[in-house]
Image 1 (cartoon, rainbow, N blue to C red):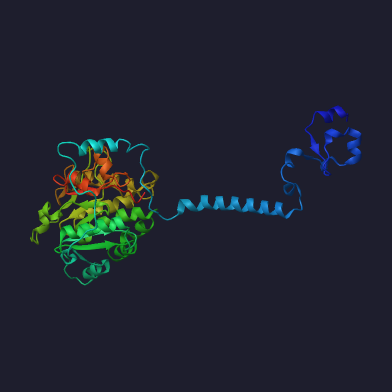
Image 2 (tube, helix red, strand yellow; image 1 turned 45 degrees about the vertical axis):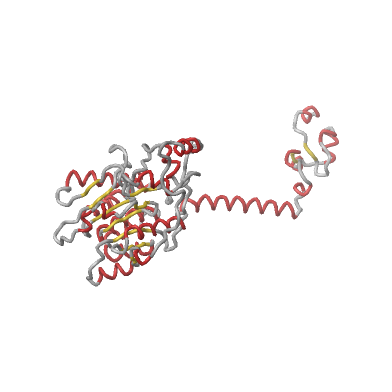
Length: 390
């Protein structure tokens, strides 16, 4: 082997720190008889503690690197199966850039912006509010065959500890409807007990749903079927008593069939046009509410339906069930789809930009009082679309 061959290879460093470029072939062979002892300079650059095999620092570095890789891989495996956590609503960058100009123009206009400057905690004599009933009490009434409260408001959350905004809005339901109504807050634990006791044929389906939001969607149909009344998401606010508009709640005809109500939003061909943030049933037992339950059973294991709640338990699924009911079984028990603007006036695609500025909770200019004033003469409720389930 000639020295010219060595001149064409990368510079190497001997284990004693000398460089092969300073040696000819003969001197190198005498200094290091084993070519296997060569190490590339590129592997030996950096602090001396990285070059010393016996260094405790190097061992610690390697161990730390291994632990870091293990933690990263563990996170990638665990996160897809993590429990639901409230997520911040998503919005487009710059979505609210025009709000200062729009709000300024509205305030300086002939009519200005109505409503109080901001929302405040519900006040007044709480003895005049809707009475709170525990879910266990309601279940016990059914088990013992006792009469149910005629006017029920149902809402649901993971536990009984509501975030402050939701607590304020749930109080609004109680205050606005008064003591003729009864308010029930269902938790995840209450919901499972309800299915176990009265709808065991759906328990396996319910338990096998991929996330809690799917179960929260599914269970609200059971509230309506078993108890009747009104269901509202925690970010859906009444602008007045619901029985002012659905007067059948005030009737006392024991022989009348129950009537079910859902809201409508936007164009009818919009697949989210019947959101499931609001339901009403004048009595228990309306058979329509079995249809969304059976829809879940039918499509639960189909990837086209079960990746996101909208298509299996949410608005897309509800719209499909309503259309099917209207086409086949609507003549036996009435299901009314309320006109646009009554339940969901803040349309995802059609609301004026100014209204988004005031009515979306993630807007820097969100103002509950001024938002409500935009709709209080035309709508029954308003939804702020917090999307806390995302």
